[in-house]
Image (cartoon, rainbow over the protein chains, first blue to last red):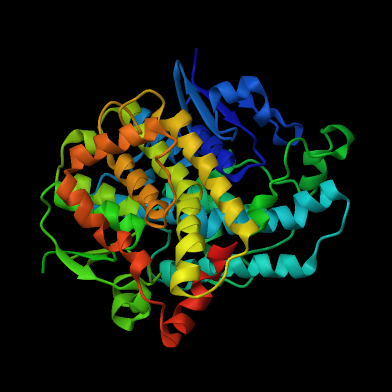
Length: 237
Length: 240
């Protein structure tokens, strides 16, 4: 059985893994797990990842959760080009530093913006709460400022002089709110320039981002009801 | 100038780094940064970590933040025994998986539990609504169950048969609510047994030394108004 990747491409970390595997010519079977249909909560999937989340990997009998762990596993197993996760001690440490920091500094606030702007309004039928959206954008701002004013002032990519796993993760996370109309790049010129560099570096493997994303995304689920508990705990931050 | 580690042992990730460095005989200068005095906001410390957080590392001109990155850097640079961060592809992946998961799971609930149960009422003199604390403790319980069922399972350690950096990160987190009086290990014999194993591997003296400060936090006098003001805005998020 070949490598299986359990992904929902509407999830940023899933996109990072998908792009990475495609870009590195890693052969895999895509196992689509539609979050909008609650497939992540079903028993068959929970056998793959008891945490009930995507992405997940199955390599023979070996099961693995967590996007950072999966990216590192793939880099190592398939001997990806060194720039993705460099062998040099300090360069590698910079990638590790970003990958650790981003969980709470980028992923959490960026996801909350996306939930507030797109997912929750669609499923609740209510319009976007502008006060809440503004507050959530405010929580993402410190990370954007740090990346734009400090990190990218010193180098072209987030961890090293070249495209790495750090950039891949950041890119897919920051595209999430951007794709649904909250352009997180608009006030940050260095970040915008970095985005262009990443897109150029990733090339045609990049899946296209349909503008009508939220409509297309949820049109498949029955009764327009989000299955399972709404991820509201994220929004309580 | 040799390796410098900027730590406050009141912080869980600082304890993990401290224990790791000491256990592996890594020579370093300890640079204390007292969080409760707001020292992480100083200009001098900003030179080490612009994000104003501990732990931070300075190795010559090289500075590094994030406990996970620091632990991996130290593992590699000082060529510690393999089990801490294994070469084996799958064994390493298990460690990575834990280290990634814990940021928004166990870490978050342990910090909140300790602050809501102890730091806010005792140190800052702020009452925490009982529903908030109850919800936090429920979340902590959920994370502890995942730690047992998904990670530890029937293994001796979190990522496999041998102790790794994952265990240090986990144990130091769990000691946080313990310091606030939460009976984390009482009804969880599997976790209690794992704790004993980790303490034995680390060395009881080192383990106790690393946790001395946090275990005394409950006896701290209330913060003076100047400190309260300094800390207030940055810790409000821990009430959610």
